[in-house]
Image 1 (cartoon, rainbow, N blue to C red):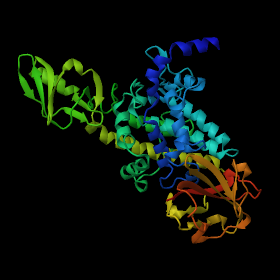
Image 2: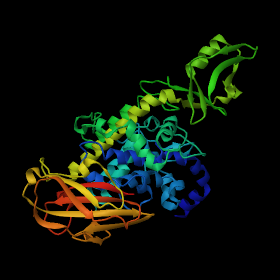
Image 3: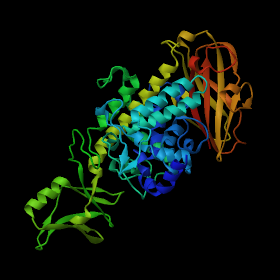
Length: 509
């Protein structure tokens, strides 16, 4: 114990420089992907119940998918969690977010960076995810919210596999900001998180990745990578990692790209670039009309590697680049171009491809988990649909709170079931839970909840309206999540593995 404490005392500064390597994507973007994946068509509606409410879930004390996806980074980076010995141990293990899939299920590890250990647990991302996934399955029936929290951590690791740097074992170190030093990571952060109000982030994401255009991948049909003995989870990880391994990261070649997207970068101090010139020592000047890339948000000018070679062939004395802007000039020596980067023009196509794939693979993860935790429910399950399938219900005060409710009972028609209804409230930073049994009753966990109805012969309901409150005039502005479950186990307690659920967010304005 003393030896561990001594190590932590001696090297925290070095480790903090490496901290942002744990972020394959910006941490909030991980939560956003986990949340949006729960809304993809054919994902079991129960996942909505435990998905959380982005972005409030990040600060929530409640267990949910969105929170788990965020905490998988927070437990690896003291800057996100406030530190503590647990986080420092996590910082020594951020290498568990990497995996080179060609090395098999127990290979492809990132173990050290500059002789600093980053994987004392000796696990790759798939191995860590497999352990978390199994814990989620085992936890589910006793604590479904805790199980979905663990599943959110698995979702984080799966989304890590959508980042080329993480499957090339390309660590990306920064001591300046949380985006690390990886072009893909920085680009996606600027596109969907940085400088964007949280309430707008989901809307922007859904414009590019609408729910009705995404489909969970058929995980049973994916390649097993030559390891048929591995569980189906392996196929999801292998598929996602193989896809992203085709593309370049800042310091490693993709299988298809082979370095063609990369270049050497320099920071610009002006905007609105108008012209670029190659400058030789003998006062020769050549205009560069192509072969360079820009990244405006990152203020970077990038010369493709092939462009530098071509210019050096035609201009042997090439030593600097002149940048002409509407409001000034900049001269950059070639020696300033020492960092590798990928410009926005080259990032955009494969970033969209990989983020869409991350959502579709994560949606498949949710389907796989639900199937595995509900082994006895059969095929023709009832559909319970709140708010006609829309995940947010906006209610203007002082109107009553009416929730549209539809039930398609299928093989459960007339079967005696229990009905559970509860809400999770979030107002001015305070959170509470209450279940409904005729009146709203506070409770702390699902064991303390009582059914709204027992031995209820499940009917078909088409276009029903459930009035939760006659008036919302006295309620402060808030968002709450309303959940309803139908349980065929009539024992006075919610049995998750025997239940079908749906959940929506209610926004009171």
